[in-house]
Amino acid sequence: MIQQIYPTVAHNYRYELNKDMQFAAAHYVPTERAGKCSRVHGHTYFANITIVGDELDDSGFLVNFAEIKELIHKRFDHSLLNDHDDLFSDEDAERFPTTEVVARTMSEIIQSYLDQAANKPICVQVFLRETPTSYVVYRPLAGGSR
Ligand SMILES: Nc1nc2c(c(=O)[nH]1)N=C([C@H](O)[C@H](O)COP(=O)(O)OP(=O)(O)OP(=O)(O)O)CN2
Ligand SMILES: [Zn+2]
Image (cartoon, rainbow, N blue to C red; front, side):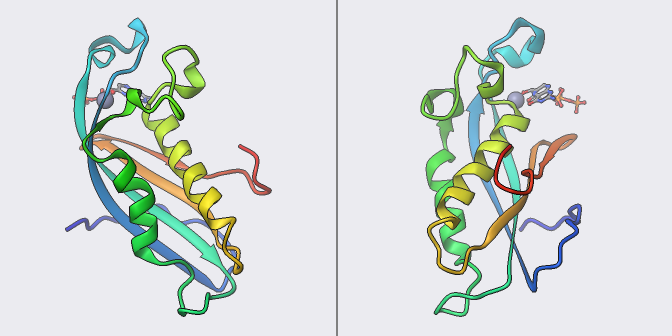
């Protein structure tokens, strides 16, 4: 079970939902500057996703917890992140599968899905832990751009 205190996001929405999940994945950071991390290695990633909104859908959900898990876990669990060439690249540092980029990418995947919902939920934070000692918090800029 994942139990951790996460950083809070200031907002004035009526509802805030948080979904924890974990997935196993391998990656490498394709630059010599990454040292040992430029070689393929694996992590159990722990993620906490924060979604806010004022309106519920016709199930009484801001968004179904299971759908958020499906978007991330199904896509990344037991995969080599660098193989997802629709998301990551060995050529462009903004698309190397670092913790920062994976957190941002998760936020973008989730927000694209939420944009289809009539009640318009918003993903305001992705907390992504890569190792017991390393994690990133990504908060998209208000208004939808990075
Ligand atoms: N800013 C970033 N720095 C590093 C990233 C990253 O994604 N963003 N990634 C790595 C490696 O992939 C590695 O998996 C994690 O590195 P690190 O925290 O150094 O792992 P250690 O277990 O060796 O750290 P300890 O301090 O010994 O616990 C590297 N840097
Ligand atoms: Zn790593």
